[in-house]
Structure formats: structure tokens, C-alpha cells
Image (cartoon, rainbow, N blue to C red):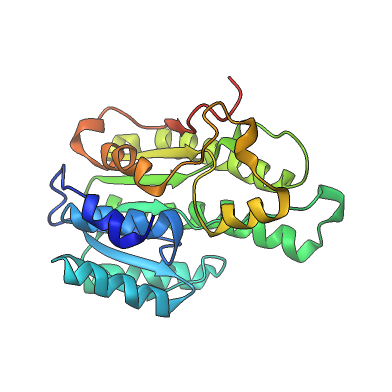
Length: 261
């Protein structure tokens, strides 16, 4: 399904007016959808990724539908860029009260075959970056005495690994789950909720690559299908809305029954 069709289906359900939402990995896939949904519901979106040309296209699409989007190039493995991105977002749009830590990469290799460079890249992108970004945003919110919502994008792979490569990806996402739980405890007294979404296999550039390498993965799924990005809209909006005020430190599985129970 093309993004134009997805955009037509986005109906505002909550009022995020006046709030700034920073989304990482927003140039494609789930991150792009998250940015569109948050903007459609009134948030001023700061869309970050390495591919600035794609972010410019996203910003134009959001602007054409009456929303606000600031495209910002960001390599989440660079700690200095992370700090600067949050500072710039605050200077231009206002304090970041919604953070969606979406950027992530797979490894698709057996643990003993991985070069050190790839190990560092996976851990820096999938685990270190969400920690640093969350801390940078939370530090500023605490100083300003403002509440916030942090949503980390984990994976069903953080709960289950069946072998076949990508062990480190599974490990990194399990770390994201624990990061979510621990930071939720530390920041709850400041009104900062930290939760995570653990998707199963969803349509994205990452899943396209997996299907090319491994064949039709849906043959082992109960419903023989993969998720579409719009299937995460309601979960994301719930976690950033007043309705989830009492929910923090929770990892919501959205996997269509794909994972083991």
C-alpha cells in the first residue's frame, strides 16, 4: 500500500496540538508512518534520519496536509549529533515532549561471524542511541518541569529468538525492553512516561530485505500475513495520549500472533 493511501486513512483521534514530537528513522517504513500520524493529530514533528532528501519529501507531504514538520539529518550513532538535534528541535519548535525512538538496524549474521564494526553499529543504533536520546530529552523536560512521553520501538525478537542469524538484533531489542522498564521507574516522579512497542514482522525496507534472504516468512504465521505500518497507529497514539497517563514501563506486543506465547 502506498503512503498516499495511508495518509488518506489517517483520521485525527487525539489532540497533540502544541506538542513537539521527535521521531528517529523517519525517512522510511514505520518511522515515516509515525511522523505522518503524529503530525495528522496536531504535533509539530521533528523528523530525523540520515537521508535528508527523503525527509524533505516527508516534510512537504505533511505541510501539504496542513501539518508541521522540521526535517533534520541525524546519525543516531553520533552522540554529539544527538545532543545537537534535541537542542535544535527545542530552539526551533519548542521542548520535545514526545520522543519516538524508532531508528534501528538488523544484523542478519551468526554471532561468531560478525565483525566488530557491525557489532558496534547494531548496539550503537538499536540500544545506545535510544538511551542517549531519552536521557537528553528527559533532562530538558525535568529542568523545565514538563511531562513527556517516550515510545521506544522494540521487536518481538526481543522476546524470542529461533536461530538463523540476527542474534545480536534480538539481544539489542531485549535491551530496549529493559531500558524502557528501568527509565520508566527513574522518571515516573517527573511525569515522564516511558513505554515501548514490540512489533512482529511489518512491511518495511528491513523486512523486504529479510524476505529476500529467507523467503516467505508468513508461511509459519497463524494468519499468513505481515503487518502494515498503519496497524500501529492506535498503539502509538494511545501511548502518547492522556488516556495512557497511568501506563509506564510497558512493552506492548503488536505481532498478530506471530511470536510464541
